[in-house]
Amino acid sequence: MPFPELSFEPNLLIYIGLTLVLAFLGSKVFQRFGIPQVVGFLVVGVLLGNSGLNLIPLELVNELSIISLIALGLIGFDMGSHLQFDELRKLGRSITVILLFEAFGTFALVSAGVYLITHSTYTSLIFGALASATAPAATVDVLAEYDAGGPLTTSLIAVVGLDDALALLLYSLSATLATSLLTGQEALNLVQLVSLPVFEIGGSILLGIVLGLILDFILVRLESHHDAMAISIGFVLLCVALSEALGFSLILSNMVLGTVLTNRDLAHARRIRYTVEQAGPVIYVLFFALVGARFQISYLPAMGLIGIAYIALRSFGKFGGAWLGGHIGGAVPAVRDNLGFGLLSQAGVAMGLAIASSERFARFGEAGIALGVLIINVICATTFVVQVIGPIFVKFAIQRAGEIGKAKLGPEVWASEGTPE
Image (cartoon, rainbow, N blue to C red):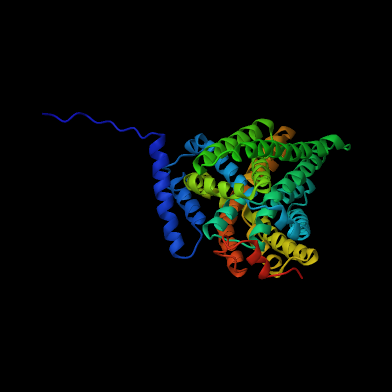
């Protein structure tokens, strides 16, 4: 009896399952050498993408972009659950000063360095603004992996969460100035200069507050963790969808959502962490693996002198600005001396703004097209580098500060281990 003819056509679930299995196993290899698991997810993603075996083509990565949105929403939600107002008040001044110094210091250093190389004011402004952004996803994953807790962890979560809001403000101002310089316009529209960041940041905060209050009203009437998890994920997805539709920052809006819940009732913080612990791992593995699959190794040689200067000056600006801001703001030594190491990762916001820059400046002739191509090439290449080294430095920071494994000890123990200078 002849065997039936079999035809096998791989479908989307096969790609997802293969990515999950290989990325998870690959991360365990890296963990054996003391390297954070997120680096393993990224590297396996690169190997599976079209820079490697091309098992996950770029078209499929784009098709699965919804996973990235869900992951970033959960990450923002988780970040907010760590931001208790009582703790933030103790660290508030130092966090504010650190945020301003590391963001504006990085902007100034990278802008100056790129100007010395290119002698182009508009090019230097855009790269300076992009350099100020930080990637919270990889940072939060490392903090969760090593169960970190303490003043450094709280400060780091607050800074990386607010950093992108400040980066959006800097980018909006820089892009408007760059457009004026590129097109030769003399007059600047002040309303245009400030309206975009005010709308995006203010709208994100307002959306997070409104959804947070509604979800709080529901959660206090639920007893089951599973019920709370289901409704919480629903609200995260709703917050992501509304943020995307309205042009808001989905990370910031979900962070505010989590912050509102946690400060309305501390029991909500436990529910949020339960939600993230149960639903997050599968989404996070896919998210970081797909980030790796999106990277094009061919961009690395293209970054040239500007890319090298960008990485070096951005790293120095983040670390030096955080140290100086911590010193002036009176941060505890564990925060002042280590927070800068946790600010090196860069991905989603910078890449999104780089793409937006390319599309924006392409309308202004050859000079604008050349600027857009330069921005895409350099940011893609440098993002790959800092996404690999960034998580390693986050682990170094929390290890140096002695905060690994202390998430469950609570603020009372943290306070006894260091006081502001």
